[in-house]
Length: 171
Image (cartoon, rainbow, N blue to C red; front, side, top):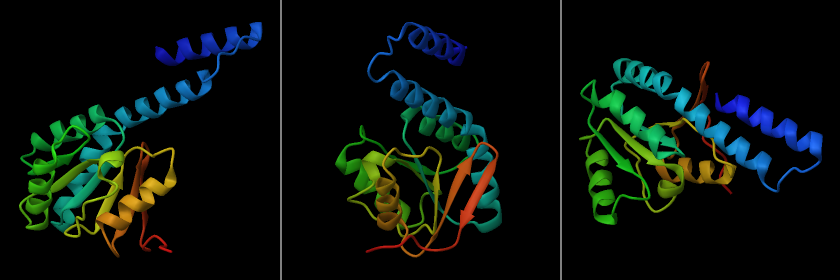
């Protein structure tokens, strides 16, 4: 497994006092990505339950495209209507997705935190799910403030969901 390779490489560098610059950060970045992949099934399950309980649309943020695609595949199999805003989506298509979401024509908007943290507003949702955390917490705060004014937030973790009812502070 990849983590065993990381540990072996790390131990080798420590033993030989040859730790390359950026090795630990790269290892943590890979680990964050793997954690996002591990959350795909939990996220799909949570979203299905959320929709069944509330019938409301939701905005989902993740950092990696393959994590968003895995969630999309799981929801598509359940017949969900969805849009996606990632760095590869042209501005015209983003605008169409936003219009459809705001009009209630989509169940979920899947967003790359980097691509969707500014320039769009998705006030049709009152709930935001962060599947992967960003290195820069301000990006998440900005994403929530731009997307779901006055709504609630939740953080999906491998072992469940943590909810918060308060609007993030704005200054």
